[in-house]
Image (cartoon, rainbow, N blue to C red; front, side, top):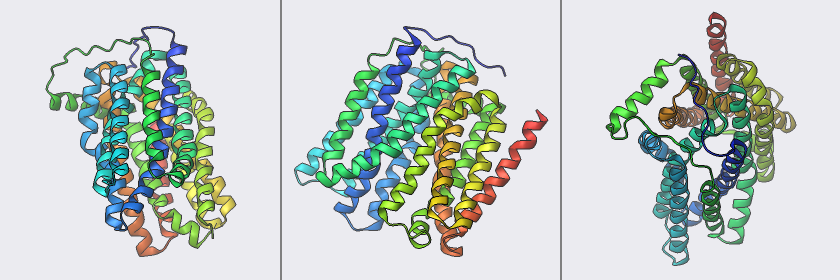
Length: 404
């Protein structure tokens, strides 16, 4: 199937992309604050491990339960309106939770519901944002790769590097402060998105039954060889990453002898690599096929986890995680650009959501497997299993690429 060639409509692509990236930067920094503040709030409200874990699970549950229908609705509705409504809805949820806490009615259940509802907002916002990129910059592979590289670098900076420490510091200053700041970030994001140029995305059949619309989007993903490649590549990457990462904190404490601050810096090195990947990834994406790009990123991650295990040195571990960050951003850029290049505009929301469903499902499975493997074989075992699976996956992409 050939690439789709629709042109952008509306005002200046440069201005539109700048507004989209700015809104994303503000929004994901708020998400990063929530990633740190939600478990801290959960621990303050309850010492029950299952109750605390339910808060983190609520975010995954939103994508698993709502992701597919949300993608179908994104394809039916005006995407700028969807993004603004998602931001305003998430802000309202967080404000409501802040009021509950201030009135001494905060609870684990209320926090889990808030995280779930914020996750639902992301199910609408994220596919709409990714679908807007080709509408703004066009369907040229190099332009898409460049735009996606900037987007994922900003996402990594806000969600992984800037947001979590700000959220933790804000929580230390006042328990409701990070939730209020996150709500403010969504309001600012909505204001920026509302200034985007009007972009037309009129589907052929707005009244198509929901299940049929979802099946059509999934069928397009399954039938298209390039889309299958990036979906399988992302699922493989997430599976291996989460097997190794699930118990990394214990390995860092017991083997690398890192404290809380040291572990935070170790994770930060991965985020820095991800930001650097925003500059490197477009060059890789523009010069290679999806298969060869994923063969590289999967192989790099396999080698990195082996280095963490064999060296047992915090400095080498930090460098290895930086390479994992570069590989992660590269995979995201290649995947995003491939989906945008080979998917009709009126299917982009469904294809993005379908791919995300596979990615989140494999991440959750990897986390479970990582804990089981570590329990059975020790803290080094997850790195061996992850590296082995990633290496096999990397090799599996090579003959396919050579055959084509």
